[in-house]
Image 1 (cartoon, helix red, strand yellow):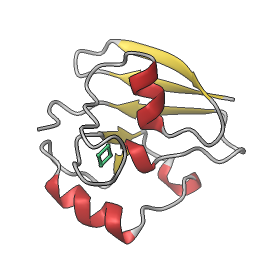
Image 2 (tube, rainbow, N blue to C red; image 1 turned 120 degrees about the vertical axis):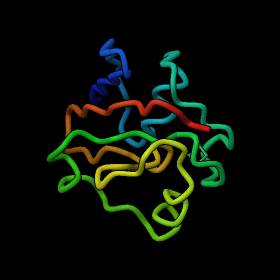
Image 3 (cartoon, protein in one colour; image 1 turned 90 degrees about the vertical axis):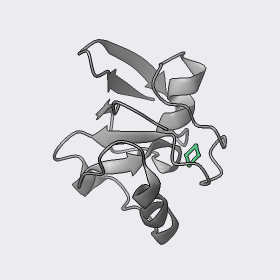
Amino acid sequence: MAQIRFIQQDGSEAVVNIDSGTSVMLAAIRNGVSGIDAECGGCLDCATCHVYVEEGASGVLAPPQPEELELLGSVAAPRKSNSRLSCQLKLPPSITSLTVHIPEAQS
Ligand code: FES
């Protein structure tokens, strides 16, 4: 079990618990966190689950696979070095918390 802290553009926050193996996208959807559309349901086909991972966390997360990197080219908000598609983002057991920022737009 880990905690994900979602930070919206207006600075408001939501903290949700996430089971090992659950994607950050599913944690957001199941807990009513706004700002992650996830139109394809996690099939890596929509790029509407874009988040910015907290600086410094990228090194402990599994790197994006080529398909994710390609789809990140289609995100609506500016793509940054810490951009990830949250449907592909799962926490390794060694991580107990993660902060992600919701971008200003998903489509
Ligand atoms: S939910 Fe569609 S690419 Fe992540």
